[in-house]
Length: 257
Image: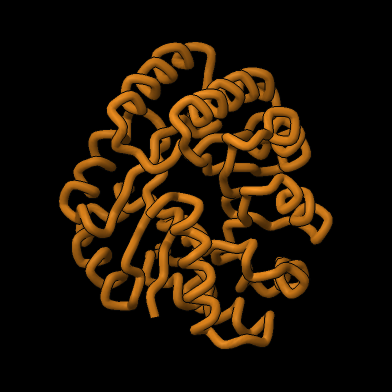
């Protein structure tokens, strides 16, 4: 079985002591491809170094995370983003979106950065990886307004209801990114995913964050994609081989792999 981890921050300092080992462990577990979303210009160099070490397995995105958007840096960050995207070596624009969990006062400037990056994704014909935390309604409203045949993407770390999932599916070329939260006992996400067709899902870890059970609370790793796939198979009462095959095809289609 082959899997694709569509969202992993392997350049994080939490992997500084054993990054190469962690990537090799993932490859050995069948996770042949790992996609790395960016956070800000501060992380670009480290992310590209990881992809340079594993050019057949790790592929970079370029984006400005909503938690790193502020009045002081937005112009410089968006300029960096455009300069990098012009080089043509990125597979997506991400991680972009809205986050109202930490600071609700920055919604308008987050929206500005989000919309700007969506337009860049259209310009460069790239999919988007969308971060939403306590902001699904605000984020999908923006996507619904800007959506057209040139826009595609994934709602990363999807944790919503069936109604939310259907709004994403109705967009057309958009997927639900399913990670470790699915395995959490009281998340309720299992009830949603039980009612969603596999053709609408892609797998992700968000490593080093949100490790699935039984590793919850520890550092997440790309190899734990297998545990997430097992949970999807259990919830949907299908074979894990089908989960691997269909979610891999979905990811290849979305990201042009």
